Amino acid sequence: MLSHIMLGVSDFERALAFYQPLMQCLGLEQRFCERSRPWAGWHSPGGARPLFIIARPFDGEAHQVGNGQMVALLAADRATVNKAHALALSLGGRDEGPPGLRPQYHAHYWGAYFRDTEGNKVGVVCHAAE
Image 1 (tube, rainbow, N blue to C red):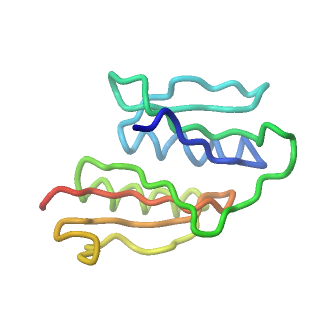
Image 2: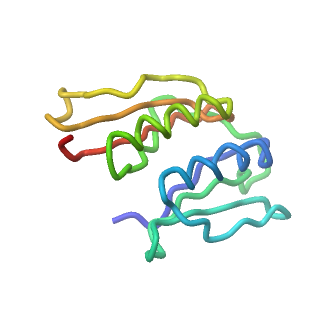
């Protein structure tokens, strides 16, 4: 269904320092990183798509955070959600909701939410039972 998701960033090096360890924590592989462009992308092991990309906006204008927009990344288990959330906060992210069950979505939805160093809202979610 999805080819790629791109989050805009203003400070590419700061965003890269945030996302590289976070993506490693989630078991995602870096597909490319071009500092001169600047942009970087990751994908699931063994798959080319979908891509998660961070980049400066193509039009050269400043990055702006969208209201009501969020990207949710899939985690293999609840422990990984917990670890990714803690890691994001240690890397300069802001808490938007600690790890826990969100039964309003479904019985096994375990999620956590944060803002990255650029203000983008990101979730990390596991849909499996404990």
